[in-house]
Image (cartoon, rainbow, N blue to C red):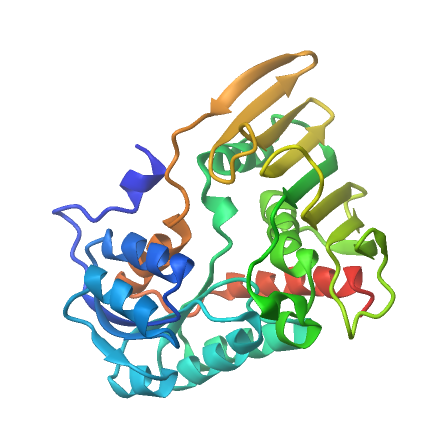
Length: 342
């Protein structure tokens, strides 16, 4: 059975219907709304966005939803959960506000700009006993699922090296991404968060021994992190297991294609890697390596983009509350802080 099939309700499944509010319905917010509606387990009760045009487009997906202005308006309707897709500077505060009002939260990454912000959200979720999810969507590619299973089985032996790359040839198109106070950082906060999460999640969240990073802006070492954000970064993360994780990420790299995305894991008895196809942001292959031979683990098509949101909605509909695994979000944030030298 495919991962998508696992997320679909069956006739034998009895799930309580939920009422959710959506805060921020740009492209990502609407895409996640479609994925959640596709589970058949929820109703959209409210939509809020600073753009009337975006809100109107979202309402076409959920005609019965009420158009409101603020998060407070959404929470005033007594929703079961809130899906947040707003600028990064707002994530932690909005998530905490929703959790303290008794609503579960599914938030775009990053959950917070610093470890302190992420920890505050996780603490609020624990105190409220509400399910907290973050859109770390690459976990839900079929390829990464297969790679994680193989590593957990021990078939690759002891993993000693991990190489991760995410180069986006375009970079963000919204000004707030380039303001350190609003974004919390540049390409590391935007793209590196996925790489760090994938490494730790795939390896079962080992302890971190040391972290180092080098940041660039416009082809030169980043000089003033309070005034500018990095557009290229390399980092090394040493794990307590002795393994080393190396990552690189960037915006607008002269790479000859739209994107370069990969996550490779090398062990004493084999290797495995996820790689994007022909510069695509969406299509991936996954392969297992044995010496010079390779075996395909997964290949396109794979509709993975909305699975994190759908999974959260199904877990919420099934009655799940605070999941202690949310603490792992703090581990990722701590690594990012150390890459930034914070």
